[in-house]
Image 1: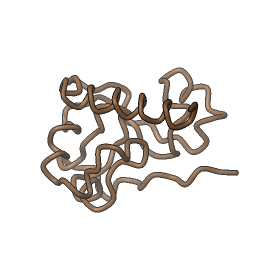
Image 2: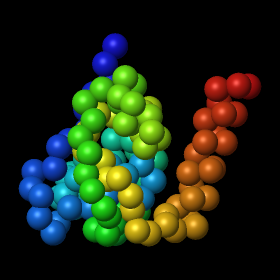
Image 3: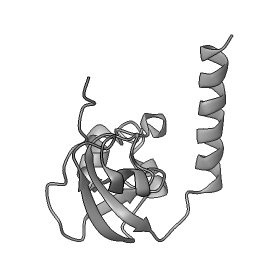
Length: 116
C-alpha cells in the first residue's frame, strides 16, 4: 500500500519553510492549512505560532522523493520512512529543546500504548 504524498510547494520563493524534524519543504500557508504530514504531533494547523518554532526558511537544496522506501537517496538522507514529497538536503537550525521533549514524550507514549 502506498503512503499518501505530502503537499508539493505551490511556489519556490522566499516563503518556503522546512520542518526542523523531518525536513519536509512547504510554504508557510501549506503548513498552516495542513501541518506536517510526517510530524502530526506538532499540530501546526491548530497552533499557527508553532509553525515559526518548528520550521525554518534557512535550508540548503531541495530533493523531490516519489517513492521514499525504494529511493537510495531518501535512505541516504534518512527520509526513507517519510511521506513522498519535497525535502531539503540540510537545515541550518536545530529543533528547540521544548519541541524535542514533545517528540520524545510522544514516542514514549506510543511505545507504552503499543506494548502494554
